[in-house]
Picture (cartoon, rainbow, N blue to C red):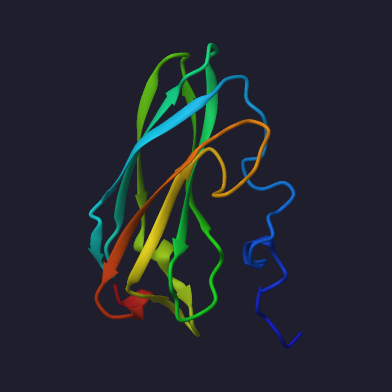
Length: 161
């Protein structure tokens, strides 16, 4: 094998074509609402981690669990990257009519791209939080929130951070 690119070989690199059964696919016995997605800081140095919080509310009549998923999208990159990358997920039990505030940490290494070695690059990124992948169409409604953040500095090898 001489061509090691992933383009056209896995759904993460197919472009706009959605996978038949994406991560988190399924039905629920209740409904959830996401709100108050907060990224801190919204501008961070190239080697810094990102703190994320989001509120999940069970708006249905039954106690249930939700798999909260965080995806990262590079808005511009020097090399091909996935449409979005799963960077965190957590299964959370929420009582009917209640809400929980969830805290996540997105590590700098999760923003690294492969360019002959793992590198961190400055730029603009979008973080998605919800019960499914961004743009996913399912029979069970689930919203996906998004927020942008910027990374400043110069590109550097991941091992130098």
